[in-house]
Length: 144
Image: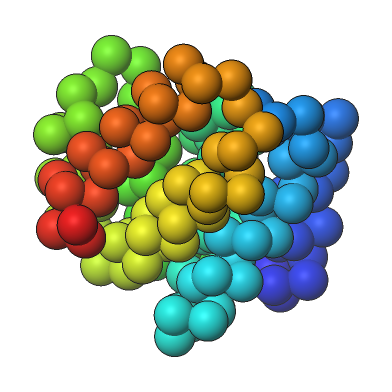
């Protein structure tokens, strides 16, 4: 599957979804993919960036991912960055760190999530909660 096809699939899967600020979710996906590209990521990582929330948000199933015409590395990165219900942040961080290529995707995701311009439109309590959550994950991943 080409990157253009992955992008189109991700955009379709998240159609109608918005982020916490009410913006189209595809803007976040694009920003994470571009962040991966800017940080020197390869095609597998860029594809994973487009798909990084698809399984977690139940837009695409794990079964779909298993059968998809994607590289094994892209699939592994998507699985690594997919937070599982009830999973501790520590376990999540360990899986990301243990999966080649996943840290760059998560770093880009966190960078966009923690963008002050994105956080500025949220209420004070939500902004404070998310700022702490993202800082903690960055520390667990050794990015702080």
